Image (cartoon, rainbow over the protein chains, first blue to last red):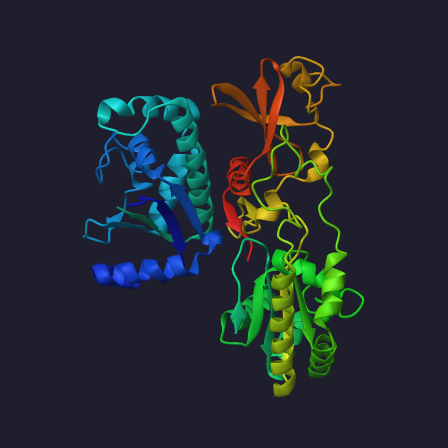
Length: 161
Length: 296
C-alpha cells in the first residue's frame, strides 16, 4: 500500500476508454505508467493527501470544498469505482480553471490551511518538516498544472490505495 | 523502431522517402518554417523507422564520434533557432552506415575514457552551500555500455535505411535558449508567444552562481541584496517563503528565466539552491502580461 500520487497529462483527443468501465480505465492508466514519460507526468509522492485537504475543506472527500481548488487532486470525474485505486479525470478547460486558482495560492495561506488539518481528521504528522515536504510537492504540482494548461491537454490523477 | 524517453530535447533520426524529403525541401523554399516543422512533426509522429530519444543521453556518443562521423550533419531545411532539421540523401545515409560500421568497441571505449568529466569546481556539483541542480548536469550519466548500445542502435538504423535507399531526417530542438516574445495577434491585441516548456531553458546557468559566497558573505543578508556591491545585487527578488523555519528568498536575473533560492541564515547568506526548471517555468509564466500562446 504505497499510496503514491501521480498526475498524467495526455492529448485532448485521447482518453475515451476511461468511460468504458473500471478495467478499461485501469488499462489506460497502466499504459501511461508503462510509458512513464516524465515530461508529461508529475508525482506528488504521498503529499497528495495533505495537498488535497489544504485545497478543499480539510477532508479527503471528493467534491468537498470550493471549485476550482478542490479539483486539483480529487476533482473532475472519478473513472474507477473500486476501492484499491483512484483515477480522477480533468479536462483541458477544468485544468485551465484550476491552474489559474493554483497560481494565486500563497505560502502563508497554504500554511494556515495545513496547520489546521489536525482538527479536520488528518492523521499525518502535522509538523514543520511535513509542511516543507507538502509545499515542495505542491509547488511542482502547481507548475505542472500551468504547463498542462498551456499545452491544452487533459489529465488524470492516479493513486493506489 | 527504437525510442527512449526522457526530459532532454527530443532527438532523432527518421527514415524518409525521397518524396517526403522533396516535400520538406519545397516547403523550405516556398513556405514558412512553421510549415516545415508541422510536416516534419507529422512524419516523426508516423510509422517511420527511427532511432530517437533524449539528446542528453546521446551527447557522449556524439562527442566520442567527433572527427570520425559527425552526428547532426546534413542539409538544413529549417531556418529558426528553436529546432534543427536536416536532410541526408540516400548517398549520405550509405556513407553514415559505412562510417558507423567501422567503429570498433575498443576504439570507442578509448575515446569514451578520455571524455572530460564534470569539473570538481563546478558550482552545480559541489556542496554543501551550493546544492545540486535538481536536473542532471551533463556528464552525470556517463556510461560506456549505454553509449555502445546507442552506437549499435544508430548503426542498425542507418544500415536499414541504406538498404532501403531511404533518406533520413535529423530532427532535434535547438540548445539555444528561446526567450518569450510579445507580438500582435490576429485580433490586434498583444499576446506572448512562448516556446513549449523545455527544462534546459529554465535551468540555472552554472557561471551565474559561481561567484556567490559560500561562507555567509560579507554583509547582512538584505544588504547583500540591496547594496550596489552586494553579492546578490545583480539578482532580482521575486518572492520570499519559509522552509525549515527559515526565510528563503527566490531570485532571478534580468533577461533570464532561471531562479535560485537563497536562505537567510541568521542574517547571512546561507544555502543556495537552484529552483527546479518546472517551477521556474511557472514562475516565469507569472510575469507574462498578456495571454500566452505556445509556439508551434
